[in-house]
Image 1 (cartoon, helix red, strand yellow):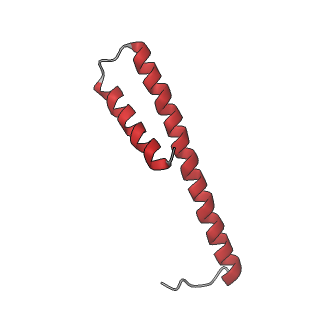
Image 2 (cartoon, rainbow, N blue to C red; image 1 turned 90 degrees about the vertical axis):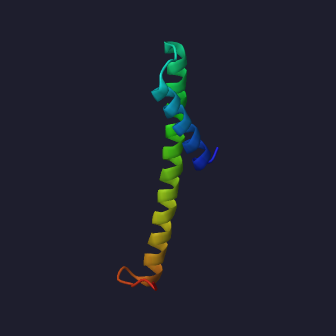
Image 3 (cartoon, rainbow, N blue to C red; image 1 turned 120 degrees about the vertical axis):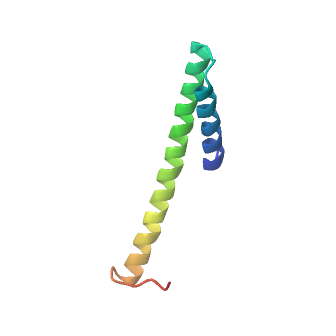
Length: 71
């Protein structure tokens, strides 16, 4: 499951919980699913952050820490 899919499902879970009207067991199951989805989103974001940091570090090692951007 990709980030966007997990995020969208998490949003739906939160909305359903906020609507209320569920019995305790159903609420707990939704909450547990939300926790799983939130963890998955966090893992995707952490992976993306690592990739960005690796690219920036590689760029810095190639061009030196004081290299200016071409922008």
